[in-house]
Length: 64
Image (cartoon, rainbow, N blue to C red; front, side, top):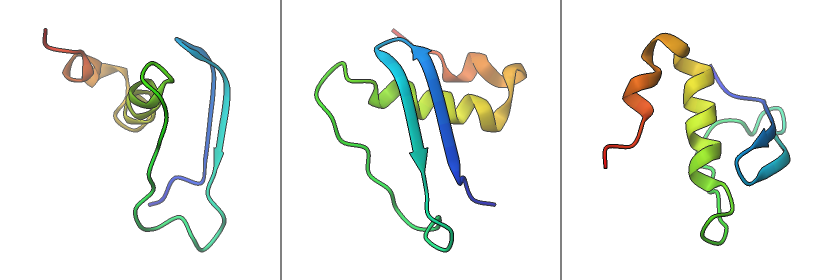
């Protein structure tokens, strides 16, 4: 299973994000780069939430 598209809207510092992985190039490592506060962690957590569903959401919350 591979992620082909990610659409995020109005999530913390992200107003509108669209990630598209070209067919045949979905596999492998993909790197998200950006300044502090640019939404890297929010993006990863949103993808994880989409994959695991709301029932396991508590495991994604920060442990401060």
